[in-house]
Image (tube, rainbow, N blue to C red; front, top):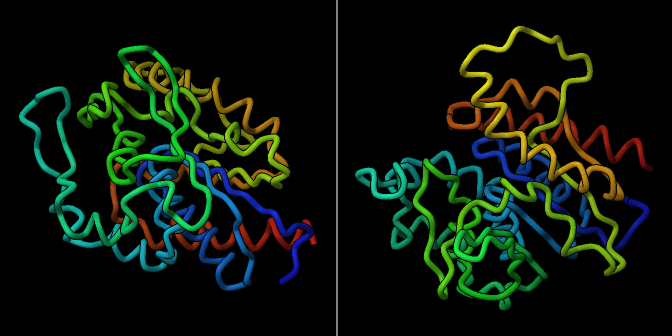
Length: 255
C-alpha cells in the first residue's frame, strides 16, 4: 500500500490496557509495508513506541502483554508511594524492551515523563529505556514514582497524553493515535460521585491533548475505544482488532 508520505511519525497516547488499539494500528502498518520513521509516546504509548522501534512486532508485543509472565512482573508495593511496582529485572520486560538505551534504538523515539521535584515535563530521547518507559507509565497513585538522575518521575500523560511536540518542525507527517477518543453523540447524564472523581482526574489529560488533536497532520481514534476498560487485560484481542479496523478505514480514506 502506498501512502502519501515517506516520512510518517507516530504519536501514541496513553491509555493503559487500551494500548492494544495501538498494536492493531501498528500491525496494519506492518502488513501493508507502511514504514514508520519516528515515534513519540506517553505511558503505554511510550512502552509500545520504544518496543516497536526496537524491532518487536505488534503481535509479539500483544503476546507479551497477554502473558502470565508480565502479570507476574507486577508486584504489590505495600502502599509505599504507590499500590504497585514493576519488577524491571523480570526477563519479560527485557523481551519487550531489549535495547538498553533510547539513543541506541534504530529509529528516533521520544518518551515523556513529569518530574515532581521541578514540576517540569520532559521528552526523553536518550537514557535508560526501561527506566524511562516505566516512569512514563507511572500513573499515581497506582504506580510508584520513578527516581532517575535526581528526578522523581511520573506518568507524562497527565500533562501531554498525545505527545506530538517532539515530532513537530522536523518535516514528519504526524499521525496521532488517541485512546480517549470522544463519542460522537454522547448523552449527558447526571454525574455520580465516582464520575465526578474520574472527571477531575482526567480533566487535565483532555485539556492538554487538545493541542495535539488540533495540530497533528492525521488523527486516528474510534469512539468505540471507550467500550474497553483501562485496567483489565481480558479484552486485548478485541481492542487489537478495533485498531486494525480503524487503521484500515483511515488509510483507505487518505489514499
